[in-house]
Length: 301
Image 1 (spheres, rainbow, N blue to C red):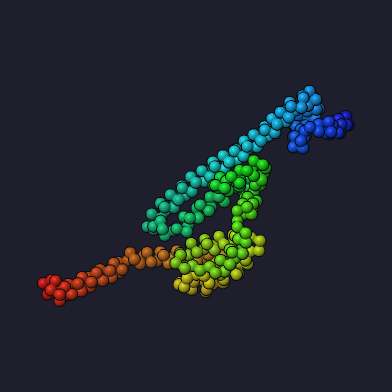
Image 2: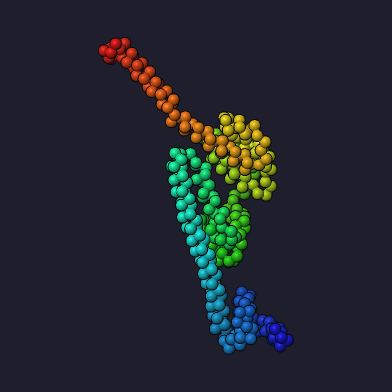
């Protein structure tokens, strides 16, 4: 920009008093028009219009800006939906491949439940772009959360620059107050109870993710996880090891639980177990025949 343009720019801004009938919002729109169309063109256009026409022109410009932002948000939402559909298809293919491998190995679908559930978790991790991660997460919202996210995107298309920003703003808006205090209290009192190891591990993972401002250290998390486990082979095995992180403790516990389930399933199908069941059934039948003879219900000797 040369000196003549600088002088014209200053003179144009000095004419703000000449457009006192325009609101601050309208004048901001006029300045944005100057950055896109050129200051001279905007000045000539406004001078050629009366006040009503100026208001109408500026309103149309603002409406065009809003329409452009809506189109961009809709495009991001469509891209997120397409990415989500693609990931669902890939997850279904992996699930089918896993089912075929288990069928070929003679296992059951329930014997690898932790691994099959991890497919849904790993799908979202394949997205590398921050905007696409946020768009994918937004496409899975519903109700008030979806309305809230769309409203922010209409006001600021770059409101969610990354998945971490999206999660942080979502947590600040919809988490009840003192959620971390309740999550910390529930974490310290957590017990496995009648749940399986995987469900217990998922619960402790959720509570850990809710504590972000002052997270619990890893050794305390390991102690809480091990103390809350139900008494049995899994807990006994963990207490024999030196564990450094919650992730390591959960991984070993799930592997041990999976091995125990496989061993029990194999034992139930073994010939020894079948013969034992036949002996129990035969003994029960003999007892019924003997009791019936004593009560006159059977003539068998």
